[in-house]
Length: 276
Image (cartoon, rainbow, N blue to C red; front, side):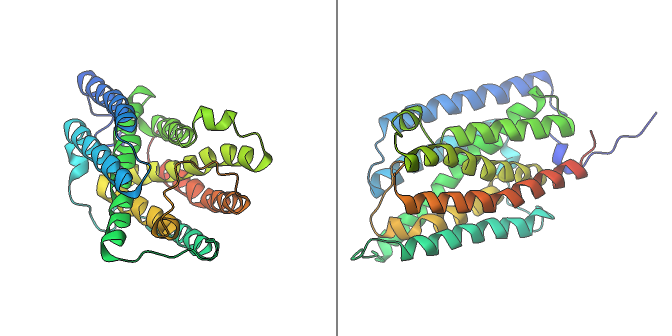
């Protein structure tokens, strides 16, 4: 009998019975429905409103992860990301570079509000956004999709791709894409899902390596904070990525290209370290 060795990245997903798989799939679907309701019921057109909305979504995600896979809520282990650790730093650096560029591109006369309460709100918003998006679109989505798509290495890669496509698509609404009648807006409507999808693909592979929500949240929150801090501190709570602003398009295109290497490296890392 041939001995099959699996890395930690497959432990937990393939070992589940049908009942556990169905439970995780049901929790994921329920979390998506509840999230959509939260977006509709809780306005997020101001920083305070966005923070309340984000906190509600984060609480929902934490409850769902706790019901589906409480092991993902354990304290992270140092070095668990392995070869993807340096790439996580690279991704955070992309966010920092984008944030610096955004700072120098702020409208003339724009003033950054660095009052402690305002800064704390910006940091908290990035944190709760990371908890919600990583909890739902990585932990819940991947735990539900991997067994459904075959398990093992092939199922993991398929699940990562599906979750990345879903994550990217949800960053631009159909309505925004339809009304993007000028070239700049049209390109933004195309590029934003690609950028978010590449980020999501990388984060999916980090989850397979770590099985830990908080590791994902740390990377995601750092990227969001570096990327979004200047406009948020200046009072710009952006409601859409399809702005029609040429600078926003250049920044989006640059970050999309820069996210290709870590996404590919992450896929290779997981593909080469697991047994089909």
